[in-house]
Image (cartoon, rainbow, N blue to C red; front, side, top):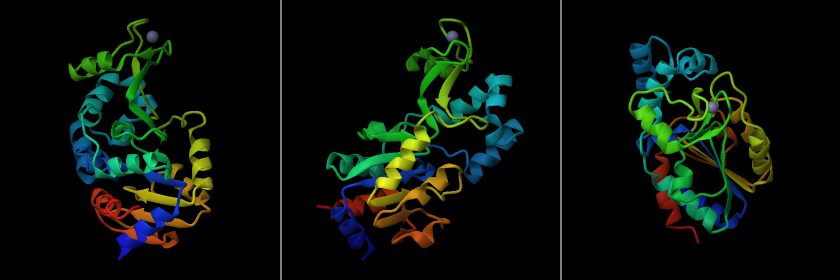
Amino acid sequence: MSIDKFANMISECNNIVFFGGAGVSTESGVKDYRSKDGLYNTVKDYGVPPETILSIDFFKDFPDVFYDFYRKYFTSEAEPNKAHKALAELEEMGKLKAVITQNIDGLHQKAGSCNVIELHGTAKKFYCHSCNKTLELDEIMAEIKAGQVPKCKYCGGLAKPKVVLYGEMLYDGVAESAIKHIANADMLIVGGTSLAVQPAASFVRYFRGKYIVIINKTATDFDNNADLVFRDSIGTVFEEVMKKVK
Ligand SMILES: [Zn+2]
């Protein structure tokens, strides 16, 4: 049984790193703008694809459209699912050392994970694009939900989520930290991503440990390197394996 093998690998390892993508969040009901529906609806509603709206130039030129899109996709109050909870539990047990995620929804922290490396930043923090001051999340969210373009209360500048937009670099130290954790891990679990987004996808190539496990509903370019591949719901796989991990 693959689940038994997976459980044995987890039991054997104490320096596990999880690398996750959108598929981890969609099982919490977070809308994925990269899905077929997301893409279709965005082009229908705005005349441009999501990647255009989520670019730094578009943000500066059309903040009203940017925040209308943002309200639709990034302000929902989702709850962590069984995958998020299992990862937090594995960290608590001392087995898992880091969660590296391409998601910006903060659900890993909400589940209790402490060492979370957010490659693309977080929708849960805002700062002023003019004066750079940190802005209060609740105040900014209230403005966005009211259909306004959120502004800095200090200087009136445009508020920006601490999210890496297209055309922006990853934040300082984030890539290095992700690579360091992957290079030192004894086990790498990749979940909810087809590993199509660069540079994030290239990070998994730094792994030199014992076991690679991939949990994704569709094939990935990395499947041939894996010791185990689950083409299944990530929440279900984690729920089953956690029953057997000692
Ligand atoms: Zn400001």
